Amino acid sequence: MDKKLKLAVIGKPISHSKSPEIHQDFASQFDTKIEFKKDEVTPETLETWLADFFKDAGKGVSITLPLKEAALNYADEISDRARLASACNVIYSKDEKIFADCTDGFGLIKDLEENLKVSLEDKKILILGAGGAARGIIPSIIEKKPAKLKVANRTESKALLLREDLEAKVNLKEKNTIFEAGDLSDDFLLDDSYDLVINSTSISTQAGESLGLPKDLFTGTKLAYDLFYSAKKTAFMQDALAAGAEKVSDGWGMLVEQGAESFRLWTNLIPDTSRLLEKPID
Image 1 (tube, one colour):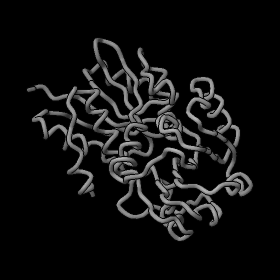
Image 2 (cartoon, helix red, strand yellow):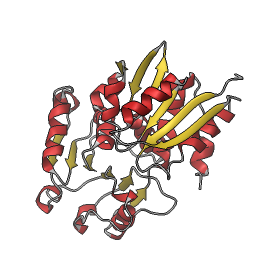
Image 3 (cartoon, one colour):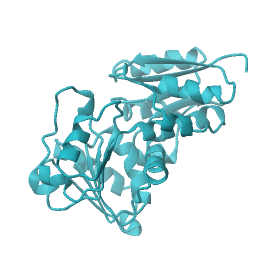
């Protein structure tokens, strides 16, 4: 392939993104030439940016916060994964149409089950945050039939809307999953203990910020997982360990695995992720 495949990652903030390096690693496995840029894009500039990118022979775009929900509006075709999530993290051009998909849930489940050896079936799971990141992973988690899934958000109405939206699309009784939504109050958070606590908020991107979680939240927690990736332990991971979580992980494995699935959508090639999982990019 002599012509470079034009790819990009967009969002705000975006400077921390390792997507260009990840996809360069994938491309090198197949001698595929790619050009992968990262641009800071806001919801207000998203439509213009996407129009210009695809008009200029762009092939695929990774979508990060805070654009995962808004980006759906600009696709001609929406995958089942993205429809269930009401969010997308990848958009690409194919057969003169723009497709939207969501590979976040795929990446998270692969990281949890294959890399971290964590089973979700019959487990109690808490997700902190109810934005596009949470929407992207919840359908995949429910497919694994946890006993209970709770979503807690600072603004309770946003969590309730997420639950209402999902209940209209998924038969939760069929999955044997209890799904609850609420706020970050002690009353809602502490009436259960959790096998897995997932941080889907953007708190880890904001230095010095904290969700102010009750310490008892992590009693009995096997794994506290931050969707944000970081070379050092995030504040959420540090708080979880200090409060009794057995193990913590950032979202590097999820990022790599969802990236591999996005790369497959763009190129029809399935890359090996093992090298990047063993040695994260600084």
